[in-house]
Amino acid sequence: MWKLILSTVYLITTFISVELRISEEDNFQDRSPRCESSFSLSFWDLPMYDSLMSLASGKADLKVPVTVVWNAANLVDLHLALALRDWEPAVSVLKRTCGQSSNINCTYFSNPEYPAPYKGNGNPCTLSVWKCNKAICQVRLDFIDFNLGEPDAMGRCTDDFLLITGTGSNIKRICGMNTGQHVYLDFAGEAPIELLIDVNSALATERKWNIKISQVECCKRAPVGCLMHYTASSGKVKSLNYAPTLSTAVQDPTAPGPGTRQLAELNYGVCVQMLPGYCSIEWTQSVGDKYSFTVSGDTEALDPTVLGTAAASVTGEMCLTNFVIIPNPTVDELPSKTDRFCGNGFPTVVSSSKPFVMTVVTNPATSPTEVPETPDVGNRGFSLNYRQLPCV
Image (cartoon, rainbow, N blue to C red; front, side):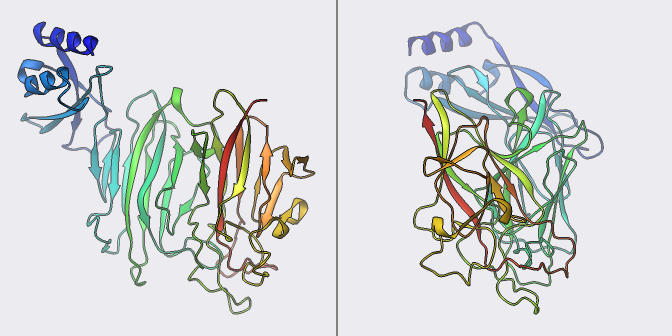
């Protein structure tokens, strides 16, 4: 506390200026925008004296956001947020919607009416995301709120979808319900990452989205191939569009039955950062959800007493189209002969291979009318718990 008070007094009495981030709004889309510029203002020029003294006396929260508007030829918003513990400016927060661009860290991309549903005008809704600076390698998309139409019965996003281009990451289209999910995207050179949301307005589906876009420095990037990256000692991982409820799509008449919720044509890694003192990772089905690992086969035809148990698990060469891969696994404390898991149940799996990664593969559908020989019926995807295990 004394260090904080002395630092505050020193800043005030020595008339030190700080750097502010400038986001240039005018003609933003006419060029490749730079991340930020520097502009100096003295603390005496800001309405911060009372705030700083309140902080020093412990009467206010440690983080005080202050916004100043500088009226120049090109209107410029100056965003200042001091984290007094480290005297570092916090990130700017910017809201963007259809037909716009951003090169600011912590941008929120939402439909124009948000939080109300998207009305649409027949045209795709697009956002261009430029690098904030040369030290940036990735962006992280957090789906704060994301509800589009579901995929078709084969898992293809044909009516509604988020299309991601300009990235080196292995991701194509995302649709369905993905609130709470996140993905990491690699920049491909200096070009922007393009986000395009298109919907079939002929369908009576309520759609809305609010996506937080965080820029990730190269030194803090998620490992290559990790579409999802988790850093806690334990947590829950869900496949895209996972829910325990049935898909509303219906299979082709030649293969009747409810469709799959899983998104097709994906091959990505779910990575967990190994923490100090931990040497292995355990994967288990979500408790109380018998559909939490239903990734292949006819889920609806399965005996309900078997569904969601290890007895409904399929492994090895039987997993051809939809499956997860966990390297060098042990099952029931015995080494497994295979690293592939599919079916409608999941055994407790432990792996000591580093890095901690689970690879997700979904069927490469090739035609909107193609029906596989053994269709997936009523699959939900997966909802798995992970837990890092201490070294022994």
